[in-house]
Figure (cartoon, rainbow, N blue to C red):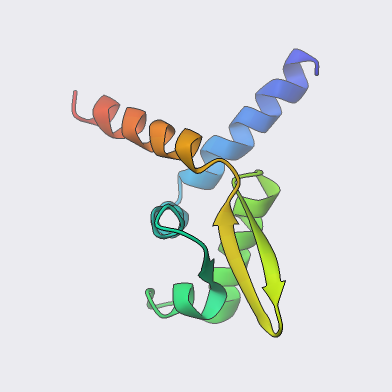
Length: 95
C-alpha cells in the first residue's frame, strides 16, 4: 500500500469517528453486536439517518454486519484497537 492510500484510509477512519453520533454508535458496539433497530432506539434520529452513519463506519472498515432474518446486526471489526484509539483521543483531550 503506498503512502497516499494509507493516508486516505487513516483519514477515513478518523473522519468516521469524528461525528458524535458515530462515536456513540461505536461505543454501543464496543459492548457487543447490536441490531439496527436497537441502535436507532438509543438516538433521537430516524432509522435512515442511523443507517447512513453505519454505512460510513462500514466504509471506513470500523464496523460490519451480519444478516439475521430481517435484522441487520452490527459489530466492530477490531474492537480492541477501536477501544485503544478512543482511549488515546480522550487522554489527548484532557491536556
